[in-house]
Image (cartoon, rainbow, N blue to C red; front, side):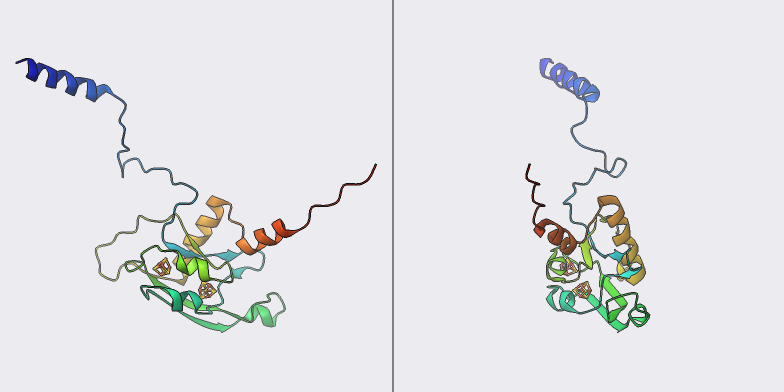
Length: 169
Ligand code: SF4
Ligand code: SF4
């Protein structure tokens, strides 16, 4: 009897206590800045084209071989608007096979790929998570906007600049 009362009391107390867990997916958790979701492609706002040149380095290094890409001559380079001679034409990632290792981001020399914050992409179809260039760029742009992303090479250059000398009095 005493044990039952204790149990009931515990239930009542727990009912009115602040929950220690989030009720996902009703209440999605805020993601940490370094959270690694699915890979996505970045957009060069200064030039108005993707950073990706389809150089294939990430594709060759991907441990699950879930990426593919093709390149084309860059029309903006011919117009003198871009320094990229080649540009991505098609790009696809089978996100069902991606293990979120981040190797593609590590090996890319062009700041063209990021680990976005996207993770809610479950589908019922076997090939439903094959994502091509446009949605990959949309995911990337969303990440760039939300995180205030600066191309790592640009950041490194800015940090490497010597501090201006103080004027002598
Ligand atoms: S994302 Fe980077 S490494 Fe991969 S193909 Fe594009 S430029 Fe090359
Ligand atoms: S995160 Fe890893 S598994 Fe996923 S696409 Fe990049 S290299 Fe491949």
